[in-house]
Length: 115
Length: 115
Image (cartoon, rainbow over all chains, first blue to last red):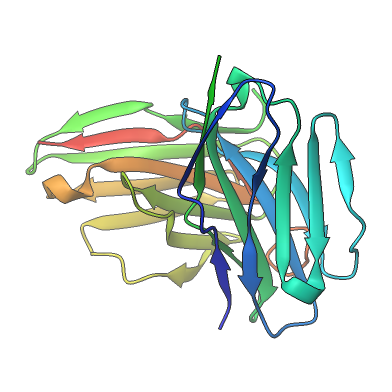
């Protein structure tokens, strides 16, 4: 069965600290997609990144970076030099094919960045 | 307008009222979704439509009734709700359920309070 686990419910850091949000997934499929979304207090989920299962290259986008490791079924997200505006709930998601692609979300990690 | 819009943003209703939530996507996508997000709970997928056809209904009570008149619009009709139905209702759209390009783009949500 497919599953996404975000074991960290809440994380609190001080501005300028680096922080890593963990995501572990389970699937037997060889083709799947992984996502990260950000949900600020306004409520809208904002798409951050999509990765397919054949591309294990790490990605960096500004202060954000993602580490995809199939060997440990993890897709971790690191924010470097965190800022107050990074405070939000972050969701990891897994998309897999079952007669059409289906996406399941992890429970989310709430990140507090204090000034 | 761009992206996914939802109206109203906030709704307060009594248990005997009938109301509707509206979602509109301006992205040319073929699939649309309704999610429920309750406090301290994971995102719950309620309904999925692909090309105006319902493809998923996750055991949602009949007091929630979706309608998808065309690929750009999605409604959620509400009647005789319960206080536990109070939540943030999020609409999303994606390009196509049959490709991996199913990144979901979310609207800002409707914050529903049932008295």
